[in-house]
Length: 467
Image 1 (cartoon, rainbow, N blue to C red):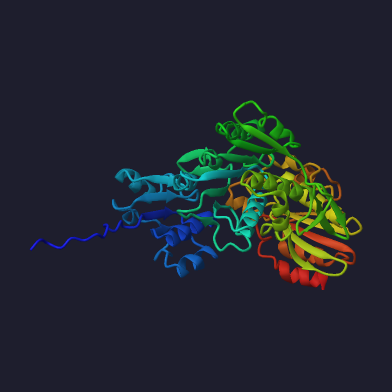
Image 2 (cartoon, one colour):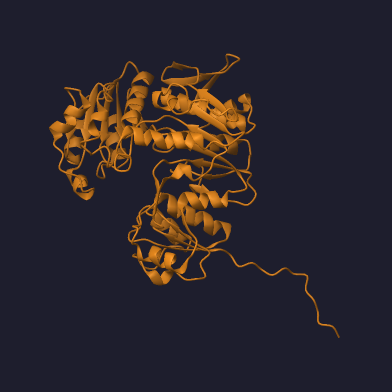
């Protein structure tokens, strides 16, 4: 008797992927996305905080112990992905190099996973998260299949990364910061976009790009990477963008955009369509109207018609921590925003003042990033905080020590903003007391930071202010 034969195909073992510095915001989301895709995922980090800790634990991916251990790196790994938090001498990274394993930065891995997809990359110093969020919202509203990688948690999306086999496109927020400890290229150079967006250029990351020219050059490289039959969408009014996003390649389609036509009534913004119809939206401010225009141009390239875009964008709540409503009363409102760079600060404060022109605006900025606390960069803030009626700048001197920066005098900060009445505070309790002491009838509060104002209870403070 002949032996029985089987028509079953051999089972391919799942990818085994190890993430070094898995506790990072985008890295732990990638770990969860890969786990959901069916990969065998492990990770390591020297410190893991919430929400990453709880989310990794719920998926069974939380490392048993914090810290680095070269023994975790074994020859059977399909790939190792290294996050920016790791150092070049990380023992796990060194072991992976010794074994000759495939080592990817986050952007390298995203590119490898999307080689067969149309890649849409949203770059720019400001607005890229909001533009990406708007595009994702519109595509999902219309039931389109897509993958994505975005740098913030978005309403309605449980992960910041999604990688599937069947989605024909991927929407990527293209950060200009470095790819990994051993790859000094900006992330958005590695995605090899088919459709690229430059939302504006405003010098940032002084620790990596010491001059404005070097920083702008990274965007020129990105623009020049747009392939034959590709599309480059850019803010036509941004002076720095005008220097690099010029139609030099006859094989590339260049599309400039400005703020969407609109009208403001009773603190509400309405988009005006080509048919003079008014579409109410939940976001406001010229910068957000530019973001909507950029998203509309991308969606048009993806086959979304104008009327369908407007129907979807009317329900777009905005990106988390971007002009996010904390509390609203009859005569006052409290917003918080991720703004910290000079251009973002100016745009956000101006937007809120214009939206409520008859109300007094009290605005507070926390200096928290390396650039914002650097004396060489501080002059970039000159006149960026002129819109509020009351302007407050807060920073914690201990953060300077942590970032290994020299001490910073309050007078130096005040002088940089070129506003004689600006108030500089370095104690969170004093900041809370100052804000409570203000008159809040017909007045709004805007709190801007990439940090937390050292744990200040914003919701509690807002409840006291608004009532």
